[in-house]
Image (cartoon, rainbow, N blue to C red; front, side, top):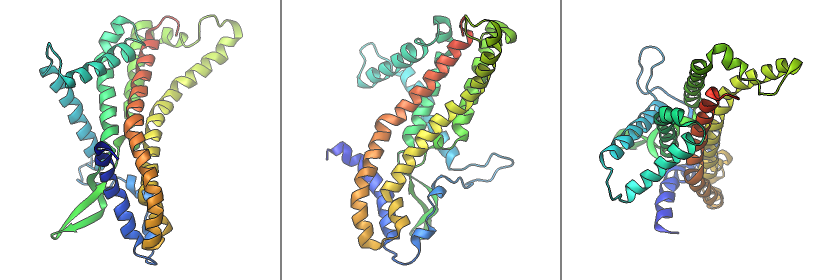
Length: 302
């Protein structure tokens, strides 16, 4: 194992496998019955505020992603050089991807220039949200560790994008934005008339319009659920293979050790696959579809 893989795998081992073996060691104590995997995604309020504004783990992760997104833009703006260093080279590649492939490839020049900042911010925000979701942080308030008399939350991995409300809000922003653009460019009647593809004539227009109208609303579901389901599925696979299966089966220490030796490499593989591909791919797909919807809203043949 290379040093880089060891650095990535060690936190996963400490976060998932060790607690699982510790619980599994309590043979016959019913630890498997007490373990509830769904609680890993349960949002307990950390700070109670009036109304629906409680601060919880998801809010904490969203705050980190927001800070990282703003910090990245500020860092890039202040440190651009005529002779780029390694960091600037990577930044310029990401910039080219967002400007030319995502925005410029799906909208005309005027629309791309107008909406590029939004699409770039959306891409980076989702990417940071996904990536920090695979970094073990002391956020598990359900299972605490006693250190010198202090109850410290145990380490866990969690992604705000694995909670449907976060992708749904991002999707609603996109859905409203491309409708506003379409209404401005064509008017309300012209926008909805444009839902029917060019060349459709006669009685077929009615059913086609109805299908396109339904598909317009279905975008809210498809865009949000795609991001939510992929991130949630990845975390569940890591959770079960990295320790959850051991606890649920309640095999005792020896059985837990044997099963853990089999399932942990699978969990490590899922972990590396998620951070190496899925986290970036989902940010790319979400922002690309955003650009497609915005470009299609003002296109003549829609």
